[in-house]
Image 1 (cartoon, rainbow, N blue to C red):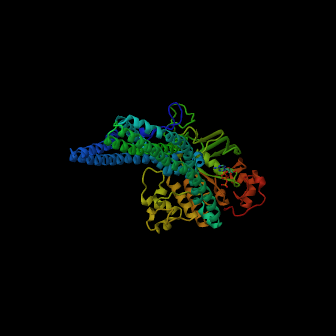
Image 2: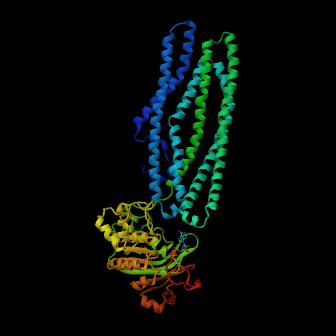
Image 3: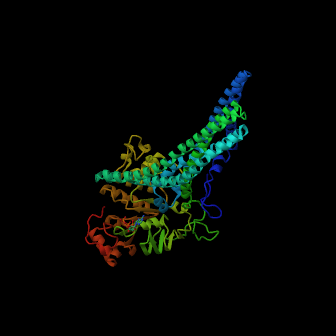
Amino acid sequence: MSAPVTNTDGSPERLLLLREIFGGRRLQLAGVLVLSLAATAATLVLPWTVGKLLEAIQKDDGLTTWTWLMVAVGLGSAAASAVATYLLSRMGHQLIGRLRVRSMRHSIGLGLHAARQEGTGNLATRLTADASAVKSIVDIAPIQLPMSLVTLVGTMVIMGVLDWVLLLITLGAFLVALAVVAVVVVALRRKYVAIQDQVGSLTEHFVATMEALTVIKAHRAERIVSAELANRAERVARFEVGASALEALMVPIINLGQQIALVAVILGGGARITSGDLELGTFVAFLLYLFQLTAPLMMAISATSTIQMGLAARKRFEGLFALPSEELSAGQAPGGSQAPGDSRAPVAGAPAVRFEKVDFAYGEEPVLRQVDLTVPATGLTAMVGLSGSGKSTVLGLVERFMVPRQGRIEVFGRGADQWSLAELRGRLAYVDQGATLLRDTVRNNLTLGQEQPASDEVLLRALRDVGLEAEITRLPEGLDTVLGGTHDLSGGQRQRLALARASLSDAPLVLLDEPSSQLDSINELRLRKLVDDISRDRAVLVVAHRISTVLHADHVIVMDGGQVTAQGRHEDLMRTSPMYAELVRGQALGTSGNGTFENTTAVLTGGNR
Ligand SMILES: Nc1ncnc2c1ncn2[C@@H]1O[C@H](COP(=O)(O)OP(=O)(O)OP(=O)(O)O)[C@@H](O)[C@H]1O
């Protein structure tokens, strides 16, 4: 299931379900087909054997043979049908398993912007409700629907052979019923599409709510958010009730058709028996076929409406697979301008990062304007500025989570878009603002993304450097304790674990987004020592909120309202940049504001948010 996102003509990829299910499984498919045909043939023959048995009873001839034949046909049909259903269902589950794997892989591979727009809950619905709806197509479309149509046609052919006049009467009675059913099926399709979108949106809101549970509880907002979710759930239920009303019409319509047909056939058949045109045994067999006609008819109709639900879900999968994924292959990154034959080695003597007239916006409003900055290849560079001035955005652009609207970004002397994403990110270690950890063991969190396993000794040394060794070894399973469930870490501990993870990587550029915001003074000292060690032969770019970090930096970049207003050494900036001098004096690095220095109305102390 590693098909491309688009076809060669550029149109969105269609999910070819039958090809996906049966690719490489021809033998199983042949088995299912043979068994299904055998079951269908047996179903068709059964009423005929009953007719023959009745004739044998009348003539008192061959009674045992017809009885055994009837039993054998009945049992054989049931067994063949059971095995075929099982085999088909197994193939369906395997397909859904592969579809889920592909959806998860594609979701993880999406660009951050696309993933956020689609929403975690909405993506998760692909694995649950949408996958089940697609599975219903697999259960029905390849065998069940064609077989019920074969049974239907076969039954009508036999009825025609038995008595074509009675068949015409039957068809007339059913025709009106079928026309009404066709209208209902079309309406159902529309309802199913709406239901699936609504379920995706409900799940999205529920997941977002659960992620904010701490804040919701702290503000006693459970009732309000539950009411909002209940409204959404009720909206889904209203759509579902509408669909159920349509579904509920199907059976009565067909039953009505059958009852009208039955009355007409009994009247017509009685007249034909009286006139000697029809045998009693033939008439009984015809009636049995008439009863048998309803089952495949109902099956075909309900299969058609279920398939509508599956097709609507398939559309949602196609929509997901059509979303562009980030390029993580080792080859040329999309939009890259690297000349053929270029070695992808860093340019000797180049700075770690260079921005040249970079503009960026998340939406309409510009966030970075004409940003020029340089991060030397070794040493500690601190980036300071008020909250919202664009510091994290700069780190995001270096990681190529986003691309600039204009300007050039160089990493180790090459355009950021000239590296493949894997090569670029392989040269970066990143500690995000939230010090995000995975719901996984301490060990796996520390070695995230590393191909070679690290020894316990190496891991414990990294934890020691950030003052976390004793706290981790105290956990019940030590390095193998799973975080995020029963055992979780405090904000400061998470921050230190994320720092230990960055220190374990040998990336030549380390990006730290407010790494000390939750650290006490002892651990801040440890961080400073760690950063000193790392920056001796590598580049460290740190978004700094503490004056102690800035005083320690070899190079400082000052940001204000999406622009770099000054950069250089601390001593020089104290003389040349009034804003920087004010920030340092007030220790107000990065405190609240709208990102512009001019709009700061009060000097806030502490600098620790
Ligand atoms: N994902 C996003 N989507 C839309 N706008 C965003 C997004 N992230 C940040 N912004 C906006 O971009 C601007 C710069 O944000 P950024 O996070 O880079 O600032 P910052 O200087 O790192 O702030 P802080 O010190 O508070 O972390 C802000 O106005 C913010 O509202």
